[in-house]
Amino acid sequence: MSLRATTSQTIGPYLRIGLEWMVIEDLAPAGVAGAREAIEGRLIDGDGKAVNDAAVELWQANSHGKYASPEDLQHKPIERGFRGYGRSLTDQEGRFRFRTIKPGPVPGPDGTFQAPHLNVTIFMRGLLKQLVTRMYFPDDPANTQDPVLALVPASRRPTLIARRKGNDLLEWNVILQGSNETVFFDF
Amino acid sequence: MRNKDEMTIAPYRRPYWDTQPAYLFPKYASTVKRAPTQPLVILPHTLSETTAPVFGYDDIRTTDSDLTRQHKGEPLGERIVVSGRVVDENGRAIPNILIEIWQANAAGRYNHVVDQHDAPIDPNFTGAGRCLTDANGQYRFMTIRPGEYPWRNHYNAWRPAHIHFSLFGPAIVSRLITQMYFPGDPLLDYDPMFTCVADLKARQRMVSSFDWENTIPEYALAYRFDVVLRGRDATPMENRR
Image 1 (cartoon, each protein chain N blue to C red):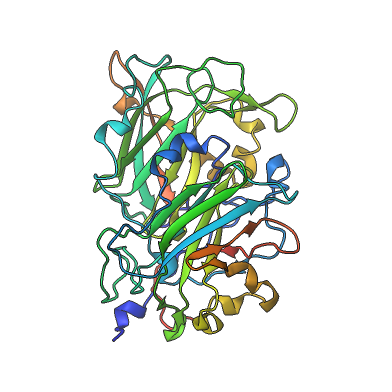
Image 2 (cartoon, rainbow over the protein chains, first blue to last red):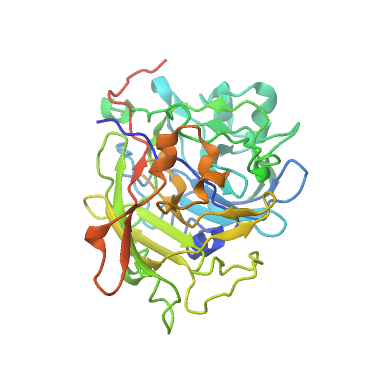
């Protein structure tokens, strides 16, 4: 049986009505293992203006590199209370924010391992389908071996790596257009 | 140790030609400053892409699926049942996934600070609902039929009546936000969102059908909206190169 997937449509300007009930900016309650990080960023459009009507969603593995999904068959520990999903709706300055733990490495193609990363899905007015990107962690030696970063032109890789702003604070901005345009994936 | 099952990932199908929108679609003016301008990087489907969060009955209340019962009084407008089935491209039911919907009220006004359309807000209608699909991929909402409304994309632009649908699939790459339209709406052909794809069948899949069997006598009419999420390629591939 072969069907065609339903066509994507924009989230539109009124996303808060439908999505605000499940804003999850703090992904890891006390007791969840892993190195804690706060992530802050801004979403900027092609005019340099803040995007104040976007939903930024995270999906990540736990600190052992295990996704809380039945599709993940790895024999690794599950962390109780850690779903690995986050949702932040941007404010008037285009800001989104999360507090989470750094994920562990997860398997990649051909027996490789992927560097710790957050899978990021972005919806907004003006996008007929979501943007898909990734955030990697600064100064992680595994970044140089990551099979997905390796697919990205070297000059653009820095757009996927957060900047350290404090002991447990990272900054990662998403630039929609221009010379510092964030890398987006054809997913 | 990693075993064979852990390392075998069947990738999801790539979109069929002309059935999914491009990012840049100038008829929808807001895409111009928001669509990526640099080439996209093709993402291999690893465990990061083929997994997704799981939601359950702890996340929602059963009353969340009835948008007509969220306030003291009844909302104005025509009550409708909106139901359907969520399957993947291989025809398999997608059970236990979260669906979120939001919509304008019967007068075509959203209960949102950004909406300045000169139509009344209905104090008895928020316009948001959610539910989980059952074991057969079925879902059901009770709501009111949303109104059409003007927007400022171009001169005399009106959106056809629609309900926003957000769905989580079994994989993060099957995450879908779409809109459900109503059959026979004369505004559809003028709408840059509905007409954002060239494939006419793809457009029609976003149009619900009148659903006589699920009407409730003396209470509500019904519309059926089935959703297809991306499915995996037929054969799992090992050691993709």
